[in-house]
Image 1 (tube, rainbow, N blue to C red):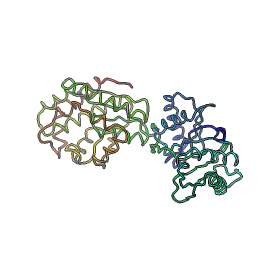
Image 2: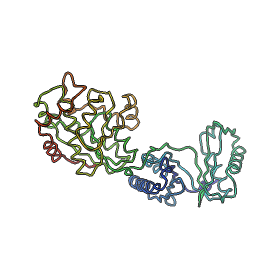
Image 3: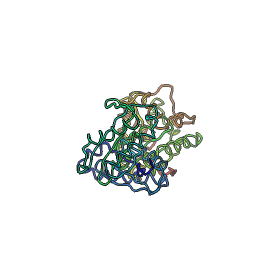
Image 4: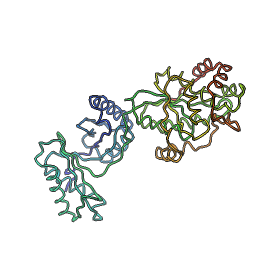
Length: 398
């Protein structure tokens, strides 16, 4: 059997909740296709992205190799909005062509070589195809059974051959890569992440990308009282997360002198919450300048003293923009597992001088009163200070 039986390598993408968007679905799909095209620029292979009913097909140029298709599939697996990515073969919409492709495809699998149980699952998106789905299952499945003597198992197969008959061609594949799910980045607007060098904020950023937000990152450095190690970590984390959205920007605020002012303002137990409020006020000022509509933090309820319900309420009071906390109900084990999956955990665990270490009282307040915090901010002239801090930011592009 020749390679021509398998037709052309391609990639088939399955959509998730986008299909439930009703009249707005087309807007989400257009955004998703734009994100896919942007992501594939780094692969270096010219592709043709086509929208079909419930799926997106990526066709490669004539003569493209299976390895090129694999690279395309691996790259789009990082694009939010997709639930499955299948490395497929595009064959003629003809029962005989589908049959030959199915035989060749199975013959190349490791499962067939060890006599695995198999099943064939067919779907006709084009009802004009002469065979019904169950008839196509029996045709291809029977031929596979005769050719390779593999046992059929429709309930729990070790190998599944998928056949999807579309408008102009048929697709055939086995297995797939799980996608990120969620919504296309940019479909929900823009937000600003308060990015520390820790474990939580990168995970929070990713979770909001999956909900359609394009995010920028704001890092508070302890400079001039700390080294620039935390900036390097923040930059590395942003680079790692950028594969999910592209076009990420990191903004860095030199925050050390402001922290010293908070310390000098007294009330040591309130210093951490006063600092958090000043960070949020500064972030709000930056957000207005870059047209971000919300702030994102990695807060998890009760994880540390600054994240009690009372203290979170006191922080919300500092700004008018909404503060999104996607990890608020997660525990540390769950957050670390997600960070490990994303590849950010190893970076976050690298040692650095975090700006928060400059204000670490022996005993922090867990029930901060908003009026007490406002008195500190009045002594600091916090409204003017946050503008000055926003004026001092530096942009780091990837």
